[in-house]
Amino acid sequence: MGQAVSSVAILQAKLWYYQRISAMVLALCVAVHLIIIYIAVQDGLTANEILGRTRGNWAFALFYEIFVLACFVHAPIGLANILRENIQNAFLNRALPLLLAALILILGTMAVIGVVWGQP
Image (tube, rainbow, N blue to C red; front, side):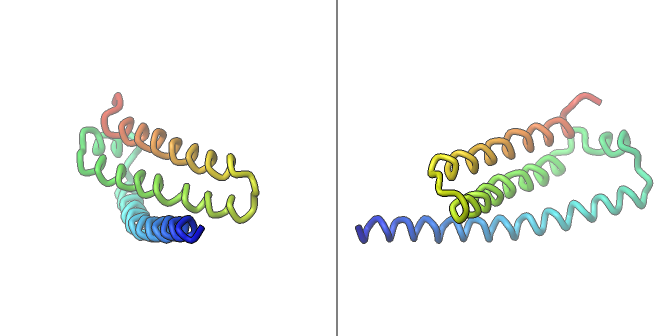
């Protein structure tokens, strides 16, 4: 019994750590994203001009995929914590965070691909 409790405690500690690290990455990504928006608005860029600048831009793709990956780690852990505290259904407590993680990864990556390599 003591072994099981300690492995759960270790898992919870690791999840806490992963969520805090991903929060730091997200904070940096949000700040850079807001700066990019501010510059684009100040320069009066249109959507077509912005997409023209992002087409084939590997740096843009890398930055925003890191943003997606940080969300992929951060949000499901938070949702799992909320569900564990409020819902006593083990299936939902596991399935919903996994579904959220899959949606963030798939839809976020599709958005990055669409903006960087999509049709002009």
